[in-house]
Length: 257
Image (cartoon, rainbow, N blue to C red; front, side, top):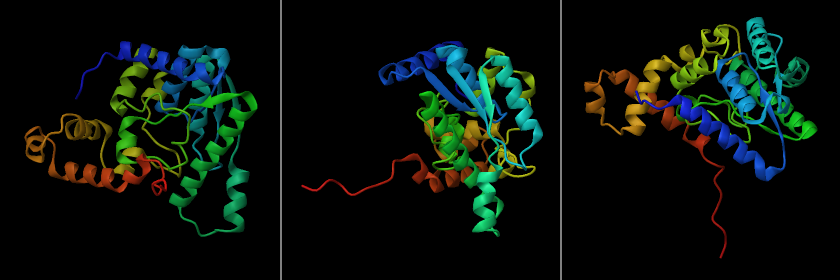
């Protein structure tokens, strides 16, 4: 796995956030706190960049969301000493499904929730005059593990160049509460859902495959020689290929002459 100076990277990210804000004339940053490690780290970096008085966190639970997720998000908000709000998205989500699509499966409902959360965050950005901070990491970007126009809808992604394993390492450096660092990663879109179970690979193995495949650009034979399995290579190639449309702007015809 690659080795980078994470202390230097913290400084680079905070400077990047400050540079992005400067031309907008805005001072506030809005972030959805899920109780997970990615949003916790993004919030901590936001505070480091613009100060706790300029960061607003929003917790957006659904009726079936884990209580632990909300409690962990609250722990992070209080640890950072930032202004925070709780907005229950249950009435908004249920209004649609109970009226129109009662038979929708958990995937459709989960995607709808992700997009509803971003609707709320962007309303907060309009209310307080701030940019919405993304919480996605490079592992998720390359595998398409996000809801298009849902949790990837943001003004910028401070963690978008970091693998999930690096997110954990950086979080330890910044002293993020252990309860958040040690928990099993989950998007909390339905009961007992976990990231690794849904993707079919643990993050440690995933990040190693992604690093060798896309940064080192090793051949399949070279990766197999580096203790990557054929099944892991096939899985990651499939995830990357199927999610290609998520990583580009909507395609359009070229301009007319």
